[in-house]
Image (cartoon, rainbow, N blue to C red; front, side, top):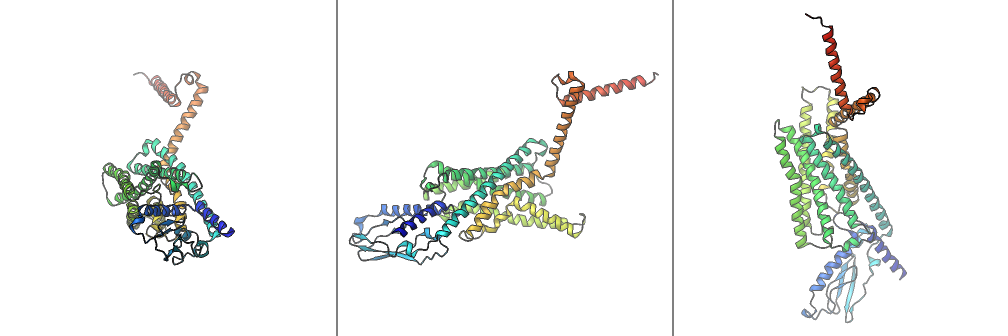
Length: 446
């Protein structure tokens, strides 16, 4: 009995520690199965078939179907054990007998037949906590760097062009994605006991709609970055402003349509919980399909751009030896990978139940730093941005120098309320007038 209680505690601990794995929360598996069983029990009419003495029953792990007296019902180990052991076997089963007094006890017991690794559960808990800490740091770093980059690009008017406008929209999509992740985690995992499985509020569902919209918008603006650069290399002249109008519609409008369709389908066909469990594959493809399509098209554009760069670098008009050409090509390729989101192709077409741990680290952990990398490469290390910052810094330094210098030499000017730039122009005009009068005085009268 003590061993059974201890095993049940381990089960509960696993439910608390195991977070989201792709489309299913392990801590919500039991709740989802319970809701399905309750729906079947609600539809069950005992008078329709009196031979079935044992009716639908939920024993907190398995939903048992109706049976006649003397029948044995075999059920596979609950899905919950699948995430608790690497040696899970779908052919392992437990049974109950239907007697005149109702259902018998399970034989063999779940703990005896269904594999359960307490050490693995503990290791998984620590592993997922580490992944969550990693992507929290990543999204926080990206959020700060992207916000700084947005301020820089908005502040300097000389940086306002179609290319930077597209970069700014991409930065905004990364910012919204990071914010939506923090909001989602705050709503779903505010408490450690997995109570988000029981959340059915409109606010919780709205958070998930916002989260999917931000993620989808981010993928689409990555696609637009690739489309814009490819168009820039292929076409010599094209109306950038008109293209930017369509880019904006694609980047923000298409995700709106997809997420709206997904939300309507969830309301009518799969409204269970907080919509954080994507149990209906057909509905989930409304979100997943456009994401995979954008990744695939961006990969094709990436290959096309690399081919064009190779042709341009091998042109006789471009100087340099073979090693310098390959160095430029490698540099250009590395710069394009984070901008196009090419790293997402690693797991884009693999089944969701394959390499779950690696997928979590790669997409959640490393992917959270993508916004930081993009901000560094396309803002902080950008030549135009650096030149504009240096120019502004020199202008501010000169104005400050003359302001301090005039304060000592011309107290009346310094106290008159004019700034350094105005004082500099006054001195320039004064010096010009002095030079003119000196020349007139030195010129002999004719």
